[in-house]
Length: 236
Image (tube, rainbow, N blue to C red; front, top):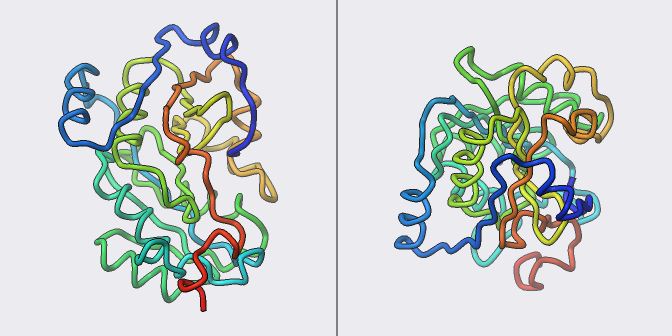
């Protein structure tokens, strides 16, 4: 989904509660942002981390490759587990052993997708099926997007609580990014998606129920797909 373009006027026209967030990772500004948001913990939002792919364009096994001295998947887990998500589920696949070890380290459940080669949607479906009954919405996070900060996730949850829409999508300079937050009312529709479409098709099908939140942080669109994106000393 990163890379899909949305015009700013379209974002503003769709939003009853349009909000642009200049994100800062500094604890003081995070606190101010949370205070201004008027947080209402009235929706149970879970996170689903999709970490099942083969990473062939990056030479394989990319989730365990290092980003600034830490396995890439650990960076995703840091942000996710430090956020205000009610819970997190990780879907593993090609790097099953590493993924399950990482999940155990962070104290979250992991489910294995034996059909990971069928595309991202197969992992998303398994993650959705593994959600607890209390979940009212879910955020979709990718194991190869290590630059998303916990505060960004929190901002999206806050906005989801307030905007009244069933789908919330972060946007950076007109480009849609991750993690989208989606109501469980769309579970059945997502279970019908095939290939690598993930939730993109469902989001595109429901513009009337989709709200966008501008985030001033390129981390929401930066995925790591190629070996050249790693520092040489981190993949030798």
